Amino acid sequence: METRRWTLWIWLAAGFLAYLFCNGVWGVSVTAWIFPACFLFVSRDFGPVKGLLLLAAAIFVGAFIHWPGFFAMGSPIEQAFAGIMSLELLAPYIVDRIFFPMFVRDGSVMRRFAGTLIFPMAYATMEVLLCIFRLGNTSCYSLTQIDFLPFIQITSVFGQAGMAFLLAWFASMAYFVIDYIRNRTEKDGSIRKPVSIFVAVFILVFAYGGIRLATCQPEGPTAKIALAHGPHVENIGGEWEGIEYDTNVEHADKAIDKAAEGGAEMVVFNEEALDIDYDMMPEITKFLQAKAAETDMYIVMGFDIEDPAEKKLSRNSIICFSPEGEVLYDYSKTKLIPLMEVGSYEPGDGKVNQIEMDLGGAKPKVSSVICYEGSFTDYMSKLDSDVDIHLNPCWEWKGLGMAQSAPVIIRAVERGYTVLKPTYEAWDTVTDFCGRTIAEDNPDIEGYDSVLFADVPTEGCNTIYNSIGCIADWIYAAGLVLFALLALARRRQLK
Image (cartoon, rainbow, N blue to C red; front, top):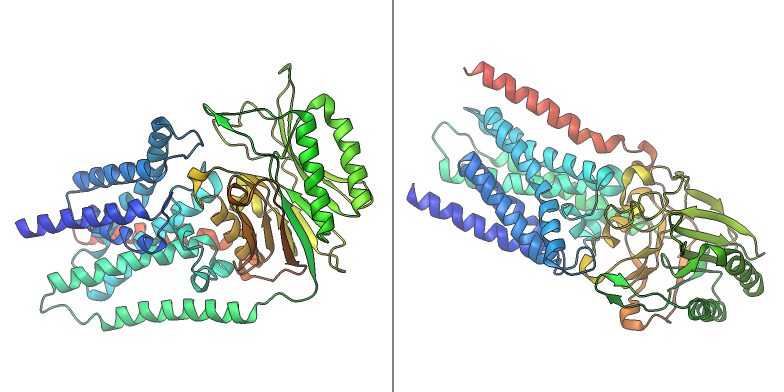
């Protein structure tokens, strides 16, 4: 018994180290396959209260360390807030701790194998809920696999929750195998069949991923599109310094000229690239209309529109100008960030623009949202299934790591479009419908006067997930309810 107890502390230490490095500033993706299994040993084999309290401490401390700048200020208070937010990761372990022992009690090997599905269903359900109600992406550890291209293709069928399910099932099966080895009795049968089923599923997943990567290639013409940024501003004491109007406009003017000289058909700026007062909007609108007509180019500009007198709320908007100098749309951010934007900005009406544009000799349908709106599965479900190109201007900060880019890219794989994400202070990315990088750079490295050019496919790719909507997301919740009912029935049966 003493040896077993020491073993549990080793599992806790190993799980904490893997969790520490799996996200945030480090983002070592392989560790996301390790820590859930280690944490399962802690939650299942320690006493229920002690095990969950130890997990809560490990999750809080790990998140406190690997999210040093979650809200851009880099203070211990925001690190603590990130740690508290990350405690939502406890939810699937609590659910598993309640129902797993009931379900597998006095059961055969195959029943215990069926029980391995409880934790991944709870884990996947958690990510589904976070993708609808999230404040951030601190607990969606499936997103750490963004560079594992054969694996992330499963999202084109089952969505992001499909990745989460497989990650958690790997952990649950690791526990199943180790527990079988250490507690095997003469009554137990072989685990060859359960393990074979598990391996076969993963082989199918990776085979599908490889086939999709090989066969789902961009077709048709491409359009040259440029990604540009607003001028560099300093963050002083948690507040960004203001930029003079003339300096701001001059910077944008040069970036537009550079994009046009490079042969771009469209230039897309980052979120809030122009910091403008309400009374200056007519003037800057006329300027950009003229500039679009002069360069014969679409201009998509991000605005932070403010009232110096503070009599009305600010607007976080993107306005698209056509090559003919017309305003095609004026969209305001709807999903505002709590604590940072709610109360200071006027939310938009939630109508996502989806229009055909003349690009690359074709007429792709182009959509756009702002920043972390692109993380929400329910919000992105507003997009038509035939969107080809999606624009997702962002303003981020270094402490977020890939937490914002990853869900935006996963939405592209789920829905079969190419996404363009011009970003202030973080990575610009242009990614196709398989998650393949077409172009990327970082203005913090290249300079804020740099312009990134990309040859963007003008045709998207059909996906199963896009066809069935978010129905796939709720398979896991339905399965979890079913297993919970079966576990309760098993408990009554064995009384």
